[in-house]
Length: 274
View 1: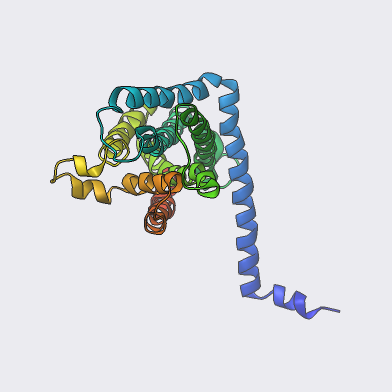
View 2: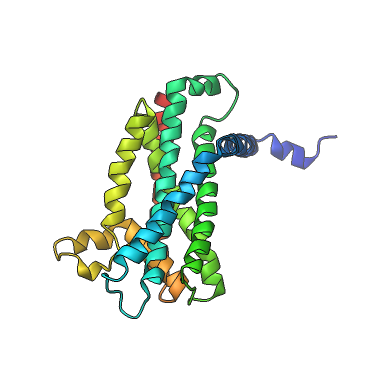
C-alpha cells in the first residue's frame, strides 16, 4: 500500500526540494573538508600563524607608543581608540591570504585535481574563506589580550566586548570573498598579493582606524565616512567602549552580506571559468 506521504514525495515539487537538500548537504560537507585542509597548512607551517600575530603586535606598539601622544582622541585613551582599528586592519590583511592561496593553488595545478573529484566547485573557495575567518577570529582574540596588557579596557560591558572579535571575524569573512575574486582573476600569488595590498592599505588608512575623521582634510572626509572599514571600526569602538550600535551594525551587516553573496557569487563564477 502506498502512503499519501510517499505520493507527495514523488511530486515534482517534492523532488525539487529533495534535490536542493541533497546538494546543500554536499556543499556543506565539501566546504568543511576544504576548511580543514586549509587549517592543516598552519599546523604544518606554524611560521605562517606566527607572522600573522607578530605583525599586528608590532603595529600596536608602534601606533600606541609612537603616535599615541600626538593624536588627540578626547576623553578616550588612545589605546582604547586604537584597538578596534588594529583588529579590523589585522583581519583584513589576514583575509588577503584567501586570494593569495587560491592563486597559488591555480599556479601549482591543485585546482585541476579538485575538478577531477566529485565535489562542489564552491567548496574550494568557501573552504579557504572559512579557514581564514577562523584564523582571523583567533588573531582578534589574541590582539585583545595584548591590548588588555597594554592598558585597553572594555567599558561597553561584557557581552558587547565578547561580540567584538566575532564581529571583526564576520566582516573579514565578507572581505575574504573580495580576496577570493582577486585570486581567481590572476595567474600567480605575487600578483594577488600586490593587488590586495593596493586595496586594503588605502582603505584602512583612509578610515577612522587610527585617527579621528575630524582631523582629516575636508575634501577627504566624505570618502572616509562612506568607507565600509570606517563603519566596522566605529562599530568595534561602540562595542568595546560603549555607544550607539544599531546604525553602524546595520551598515556593516549590509556590507558583509553584499560582499558575501554578490562578490562571492562573482568569485565562484570566475573560478568556474578559469
